[in-house]
Length: 274
Image (cartoon, rainbow, N blue to C red; front, side):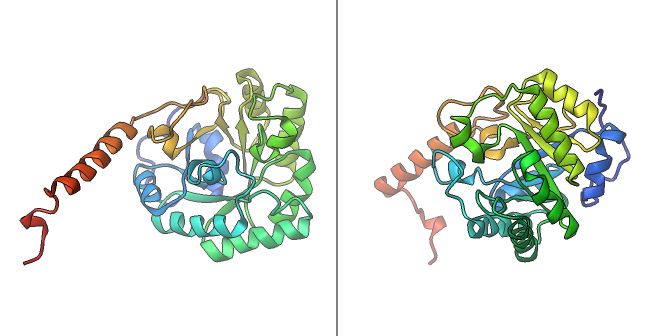
């Protein structure tokens, strides 16, 4: 799918809505999505013009240092989503439904999706899974709650998949993506799939595809804020581009603070009340 930037003169200050997202592929506008978890980051990326702020259950790994997202609870997602919503003036805010908050039944999925929207003020929810999760997506959408889908590598399935690895079953990817679209999702994340497969899915689906490790042919891209800012330690996945390396100046500032306190040079008289 060929894309071009939005024409100049579009109102970038108007709040982004679900219909705006759905219209993006037709307007050849590439969608920028950032996964984040707090008010300062939300303000930063909202003011930078991000189209969507995704409150990801990846907070289990990024914020809490856990090996996966499985332990994150619905209450924790709601807590972080409230902070992100307060920082978002323009971007569409989407909240991940965490592991076991929607898998049991369509009724459970609707109830918990409803809690997220009612208690946070967010605009939509995201849940993982293709054909098997279609009844849950359809039930949530029938309750007038917009749903973003997620297929390919689904991190909540890490136990079944045997780890975080590229998903290469082209037929299953397309079947899952079509099921998610047919169930009423307004967009879909494609994670860790080969570029040709993501390109085919993006061409066939009418809803926008958001890629992460899915090549350049999706209708948008998502990265975790901490990853793109260079704040995540350790080995980075192939798809992560660091647009800055903030860990070095942050580490330097931390050391300078500790040293200044130990030496008694902070606070100075100008930093104290007389």
